[in-house]
Image (cartoon, rainbow, N blue to C red):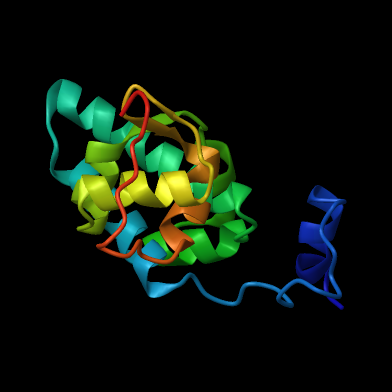
Length: 151
């Protein structure tokens, strides 16, 4: 076992290595696309919009790291060093509209996934720690109607 393989256990003592997937070897395509889209928006934005896009990328990075993806995988996706990813991560509230734009999902679908995963939505925003769990939730069936308070 290498040090890199033991890191998630050291950072997350509650992780059960016997029942969890061994370790993440690559970001899933949808999460990698989310990260790349956030980074691309950041590169194209100007002025105060660039600041907002930069913060959004930091929050996406934080969500990925919180979900247990190693910094080296996130860094590889952006073509930077792992150390820069760790220092760039910043947890915070992300608007469902921003997530919808980056993922191509409908805001209503995101809200239904939040309900299905018991994620807290505050004023149409989701905390970055919940991002991967919500995006990994199965799509809600079109026949159900859920109401989200505060969305």
